[in-house]
Image 1 (cartoon, rainbow, N blue to C red):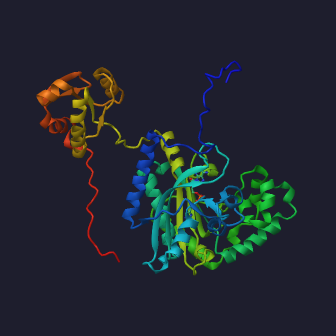
Image 2 (image 1 turned 90 degrees about the vertical axis):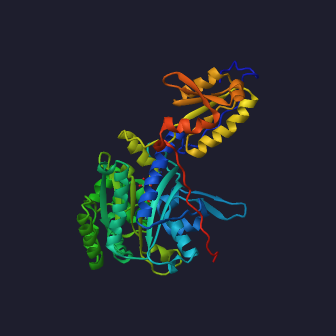
Length: 451
Ligand code: HAM
């Protein structure tokens, strides 16, 4: 604002979204809608049912579930006290909440495995940059209650099917690793700590801090010095138990069976503590691990950590915002169903009244219709129709109301004709074509017993 601003031209400051948090505007909703549709379709085909856990949970859910010494819990959670002084957190990821819900609702007694999926916003106080936001959308799949490498591979295959549907299959690369059971990993952690002791000064500040709390994370640090050191660090392969090795070999065998290409990456450890055995990420082939588009793994210990009995589980999640970014970079457009078929223009109170019923009848028939209900002249209403690239306008003035007719105007050709008001819906359907109507069948409700 300039120094010479007077009281009259001082405007109220406009409020913006917080850094890293975005609106989803209509054009981007076309991508969101498309991705959700693909996910729902693939989930239904495989017998998964949808779950939504609350956006807000007791902080304990994530501290216990994700791990106290992870970056997500230590640095990235939106945590605050509610009015009763309880610590609450906006969910930074989906798995811990799903397992909390699994236990809370006794899903252990449902037919196993319990197969759930979700499509939801998540929150991490990360440093905002391209592809990295503080509020971001994920879809995720979880299979709880069965332990078999075939399930790990089916999860990976699910992600691949979805990428294929989105036109993105060939731009991602699957990175896999096996980080063993909690037991074999604890021996490895010790070996890692021993290796790094005496080298602390070459580590970045974050890694110095992680060394005794979460040494595995040192392996995937992107800082140059840490990366050089981690290349020479002991490899987990030497610490894998017979069971870990067998599990890993089976995963690779099944991936080959399904023709899913993969790269083994012994430094892939993932940022969340709950993983056991198989872990994987999907990387953009051109940029590598910086902004993975999805990731997951087996997490056989989490149900116990959350207060249940020993229960195996596996799952993954993908970042919807990042998938949209890749679709845009690759000029992949989602199908749009937002185009309008007809704009109804009117002049005068009587015409407006008649329009209300005509609009209803058109919409019920599947014609996508907007009514121009303001007091603008017919000319400016037609201008609006052109702006929205609407192919047909209906025009109703007092003369037409008296005569029981209505004008259909072809906006492209600039030609118009009168039709009887009673026939207008079918006339429009003929012009648009039955196949192009937006037919909506919600499905029928059925009567059942309430227990
Ligand atoms: P994650 O790797 O932390 O895993 O997140 C999964 C995906 O969410 C990432 O690959 C990325 O695409 C997206 N994502 C994460 N953080 C951001 C961000 N700040 N901005 C934009 N996108 C982001 C999990 O969350 C696990 N719960 C996955 C899982 C499910 N494991 C087992 N079951």
